[in-house]
Image (cartoon, rainbow, N blue to C red):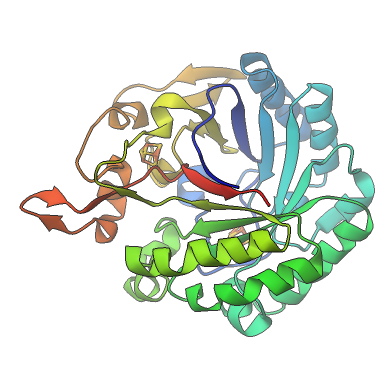
Length: 334
Ligand code: SF4
Ligand code: SF4
């Protein structure tokens, strides 16, 4: 069953970056220490910040991120605290190296998903993007998680560099026992995006290429019994555009206390909220909240500002299509 997953009005998602440090140097990494610092939050702070959001949004989902969150020695304690605070679900995003024996310090009852990142169906595609040996480490990590009974999801970030290899993913996903597959569109943000060469080789694919490839591969993945989610990216001119910043409760928390409502804003000091003395406070205007209500024919206003190469072609000033909110997804449940 295919459906567009509109933004939920009833649940909140807390994307909690515990640190910005990572053992890898992926070519398209969006982590920006200039904006978000190099601090690793201590466990006492993590617990207080988890409580802050649990108070504000009972039954939110929490996703622990980094950098590489398993580099945090107290990640397992953060997971236990999230459970104690009755978060609806707990996910750990990881590059697969699974430091500090995290699989032995948590249980499948505590962690809903370990979510692995892999950008190619074999080392020759993945490793030039994510680092030598990262395919092997990631697939080994998936196998170790499955053996211990954890549910596993996998994220594939699509760019011009690897869209032509996506078709080879369905058999690999089945072989690895992956439970959910997320196709992601590369974000042209983070320090790497300042390099013109990188921007060319890792560019987002155009609408024709996206629509030719992504839905078909997604169907094949679903035929293997795996739930698959991918961003909608493009809206027909007559489709309704909505900005998640106005209608959904997503929070992207960074270790320096910045809290964004829109991931595309993360390269700029545009955060609408910040944590100060363990309180969540609004930041002075102008901030991202001033952008969300702006209505433009091209759809997402932030895309227009930071990713103008993606703008739809226009006929007599009217764009042929719109760019959807990056949080709008299609989901196929087998
Ligand atoms: S694994 Fe994630 S945080 Fe680490 S370098 Fe790659 S994209 Fe960045
Ligand atoms: S990606 Fe665009 S539409 Fe979505 S929250 Fe950000 S500004 Fe709004």
